[in-house]
Length: 517
Image 1 (spheres, rainbow, N blue to C red):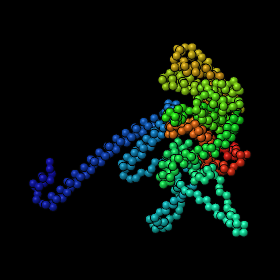
Image 2: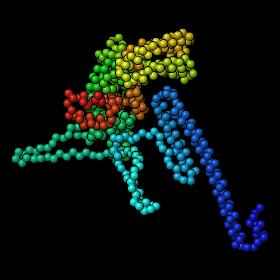
Image 3: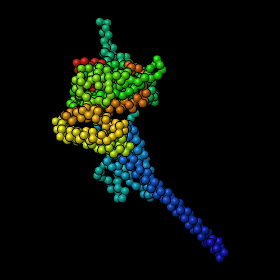
Image 4: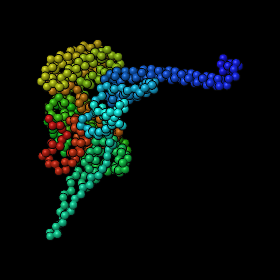
């Protein structure tokens, strides 16, 4: 029923009718606002419910991923995407909750956030209130505490110029001119300072940026760095740094236990207009041994075992390798083989993913061996050796007996049979680590050093030549060794390039990227 029309039939009081019309319009407006607010609330509640479910799903994906469900690089990338999505969902939830609240809500505390590094310089910004008197009584305010929050900031690469001014002084009597000697440099007469060379080398070999990208970064600051110049500086720097790598090789071959592995790279073959396969061979010191860690890369045009024999020369000791046949000629010539238990584990992991209960049992037994190693990681060699003898050795023997017994019931050619055969074939090499406390049980140490190169070669695609590959091996060796020694590779390289031109060969060890113990 139209209430206003009904009243008009019974009264002619215009002010009353106008007031009533206003009241009715206000009621309709409020009813519409209430309906809109209810609809907004319903949509917000549905969105919160959907975001909450999505957030729970992402958390299950992120934190429920098994350690070997993906390859390491894939897992890192997957977790990165998951972290981005989770943060975005949480931000959307906060926005929806803020929109429903009549009063501003305090931000949720970030649990477990690590303090920012103490060594970084601090720039203080003081935010004083507009007035230092009380807004209630007008009395002066007194400082009782300070609420301090910190934000991390960064400046992009900053280009600047060093001006070297050498005054020329003349003797009127002798008719001679004297001046200070020009500062020694890696590249005589070049415009690239040690700092710029360090930026280029670390950008190319640690951050996986091809030279054309470095050229583009410099161009944003209107600094012309042609690729031809960049390439020349890289080549000259590698030649200058070569003596450090040769000395590192001497130091590496003094160690009684080494790791070895190799990774393929593509090398440009201009004659055919294509690329061909070459290899970076990696040799790393044992992390359970004494002395700072060292890793060296040796660029070769093939995977022939002769390259490993040439690099190691007369070296004798324990060598941790995979099952590649190129290393076989070394064994029996004073080199003792160590097998990588991680390769055994990977064989069974592939089967376990397909639902094999036998693989599940094998992985459980191998996990016990790794748990012992984790327990003794910081122990002395003697204590670790005792633990291995008392607990690892019996478990290894039990694992071998179980593999032999299980293999008897396996069909020839099955995946499980092949995994067991792979394990038993090199059993002496796999189990040898348990004889002492200083031998590694897998080759993960050197594989972790190769992983950055596997990422980098997806960006730079191929080595331009054999010489270029050897230059890359030199720089990779130094920068990754510096990182293993917990040094800042860029800072170490800049300091070394400054000192190297006048540094005596007798003190070369002082420039090596090794931490002092």
